[in-house]
Every structure is written in structure tokens, then in C-alpha cells.
Length: 121
Image 1 (tube, one colour):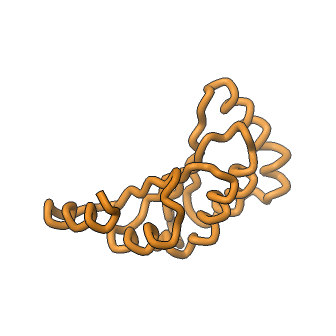
Image 2 (image 1 turned 30 degrees about the vertical axis):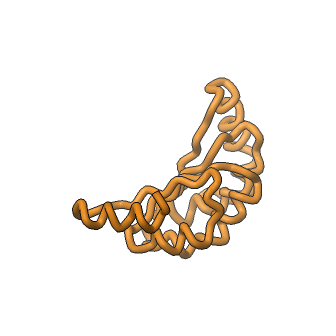
């Protein structure tokens, strides 16, 4: 993957320009290679939100809790795709404001009802 410095020089200006034109921009951060650019994306005022998917090599979203907290420190909304069993810990450890959690698979209505209890809905 591209280094942080190369990302700042070659990619971020283009992404920021596209975000300004679009008016809103959610950047998809996929896996450990892209994760290293999360702070630069979160710090950019033109980027509206970030969406994270574990990707190859990182089967757990919980491994990225520090990154999610960093993104939230910039007051950026974040969408987290994760295994269903990780939802309770994510809800407990992250600020609920601007947080959307997308479980990868909910097997049935009973699991969905339990999930609603966990998130307080």
C-alpha cells in the first residue's frame, strides 16, 4: 500500500476536492492497509464520515477500537461493519453519537431482537 506521506501528497488532495464537489463524502476504509490513513481522512474537514470494514488480515473490528476512538475524536461519524458478536463491545466502548454499526450477518429474528436489546432500541 501507499505510505502515509504519499497518501497525503497524492491522494488526499484529490479526495478532498471530490468531497467538496459532492457536498458529502463517506470514505470506505478497508482493512489494515487502508487503516493507516484513517487519521488523515478524519482530520480533513472535507471528508464527512468514514466507513470501516475489517478486510483481509483483520477478522475483528475490535482490533481497531483505538482507530475508531481517534476518528471520533475528530467528531467524524463512523460506520463499522463487524461480526454480530462484536456489537455489544463496540456499543459499550464507543461514543454512540455518530456511530452506525452494521453486523455482517444476523441469522434470524431472535438474534435481531437480542441485537435491539443490546443497542437499547
